[in-house]
Length: 496
Image 1 (spheres, helix red, strand yellow):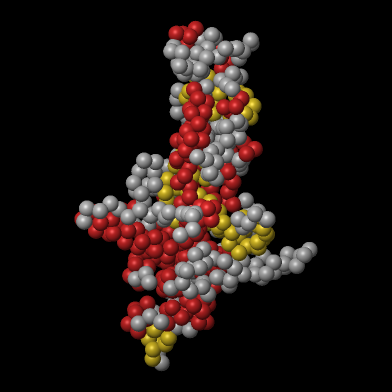
Image 2 (tube, one colour; image 1 turned 90 degrees about the vertical axis):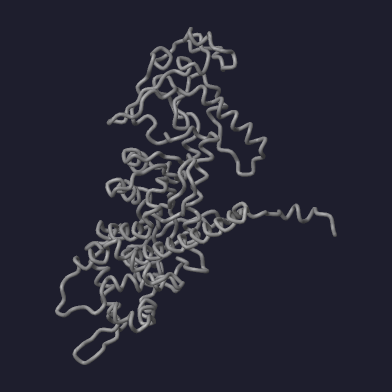
């Protein structure tokens, strides 16, 4: 159970309640239920593991101690005496908030006012001591089903006209994808910086969009708006579902906002993909035209790889880095930068660069240089326009060991959705929220992630206290890794 003052502190720190109250139209008489108390009731409902139903919100407020009910306005003094809040009043206030924050013509995307309220609530749920603890974010999207049944075939009439059909992974071998009716939930979770200390994996930003919209361009403006709010972007970790989008919908806006991308590449984007001034474009970098083809076609290391296979893979990626054109400058205001031939940088030996032939023979040697060398071989430096590597360029060479270690942090996004879908606390499966429409669903989802952040903080503090107690006794921190024994090892074990 999350203490009541903690949830009230989050709501007050966000300023969301006051902002919404200022937006609501004035009625003929004062409302008994304020927006602040409504948001508090939503969070109390989800903190107790109850579904996101307005009846449960009313029950959560009515179940508070009497003095708290009077303080929050659940019990108010009227001319005829004390008057307790009714479900009709809760329904009316929530509907008023949803209509005010929603768009006049719903299109399946949140209004700017709704997105701002949700951003403020999530940001307020992160304690001050952790706001600058890490600038790295792991992003992903997941399914968020609508309670409405899908429309009959050939029609679009249903209780939730903003919802649409979408695809999701079910992790089953016989059927990799399946359809669902509803929305996409996009989430950005805080993960540790490279070589930085561990941090709690807070949900920092989120949005909800109809499945008729691509979730990537729907979430990109939410992330790029963070620097303007005083939250600089660091590493942004994403899978191939993000990197495969056209650059203007993902990579280019994030780089312009100051983010360093660490992402997996779609199989269609891996390997050699054309040339620029004679240099080979591969895996987000420019390579010497005489780079061995096998090095340019390296795939990411398999999860089941042995330590020996990992060492061999890392050796090949390190050799491929010798053929890469070295960056000399950072991107200018227009996105241009300059690179140099690897032979001019002393990484390889090439007859076209006589000075490089005096280097040690432990470097690769170009035995057959191009008969008609192009600009990458003849010029001292080469200018690279922003459109050449706009889609696939990233912080580390793909798929090197440095990239693999950095990208491993993206599992924080998976854990973020796992905690939001845990049936032991709250689950966002179909029926958890019986309200239809994007605005009500997004408000309850934000309340759920806010509560989830408080659970993460409580578990983090308990773990730190446990580490401190063990350190006082001279014991090492308790390992979170579990030993796993495969079925093959169990079956082959000798009988007792």
